[in-house]
Image (tube, rainbow, N blue to C red; front, side, top):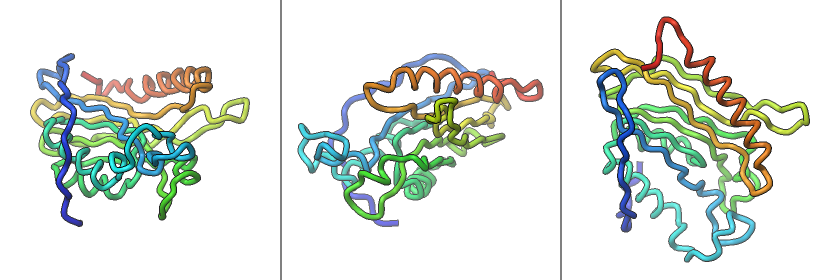
Length: 209
């Protein structure tokens, strides 16, 4: 693995306490990291035309991703719009995380990315291996609705076991249809996600805490 370049200045972020799992407090970081393949400084590749091109450079931006994750102390990290999936798995492992990446076969990066190779974006889920272990994981498949449009999008469901207490926590990450005109489709996708997640989470043997 190549040496990590120096990171730039990060925005200040605060972790907000919300609850506990079986008496064990967990930090969860959720992040749309903006896919490299959709972050170009042009209308056809993300449309970030008001930003200087150097601020979207993947090498520098990704170094800041890793710096922020390491500094956050998060036990669980969920991501959307993550491409470079194999790199994420290796780099997060070096930070003490195990995880899963689910690439999207419909990824717009496969069409719009300017450089090569064109890598699909997807969703990812990582957990600190010294605090949690994977009990069960489902990498969801894309499913078309009655109208032929994608109803179920890329998603990951996982049940993790807290090593300190034996309690289980159930998590999901997904990325719904993008675009200003996709509101109705996102609503249908959300309904489908909630229904499927409830079915996954409801286990008499391993109830979520």
